[in-house]
Length: 206
Image 1 (spheres, one colour):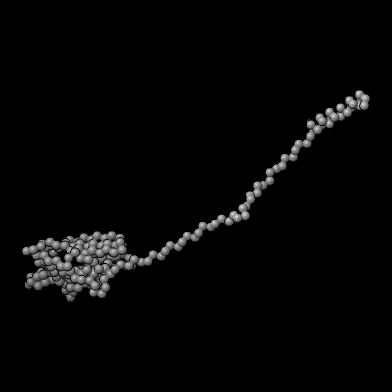
Image 2 (spheres, rainbow, N blue to C red):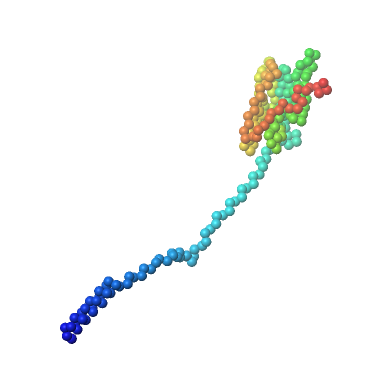
């Protein structure tokens, strides 16, 4: 091979190498496809919240009450009057002013309870007459006052059941007609304490 031919071959190689270096195609960049979330073959569907349990129906509270003729009488007597109370409802059943008239006869403020018994508690609501059926516990069986003995005494009626409590306290004085009354309650509805039907009407025909 002569010098001219060798020179031509060398130049051809240089041109090919330079062409491939400066004009080589850029590599194609692959665009990232959407990510595919692989699902586990044992994956269970999301659990739904359990339905809320229905609230249990509340049973109405029942209070022990006195049966027919279940209450007992409590007698209170002073030099001026006689009174009879009942443990059933802690009510007043009888009230007599002894020798009140000028002729020495008595005056009866109450001979028997009326439709609304005196000192009978009345609840606000459907159980308005419930307190009159409750059986109270008295502090004494009978109470007697006189100028020669005790001149002051008290009678306390208490009731407690199912979280409800009632305490009725009466204080009597031998020298006058005054009676001090106090009432304490807990967990009871609103209530009234009436003087009662026919109390003070000793003679209904007048």
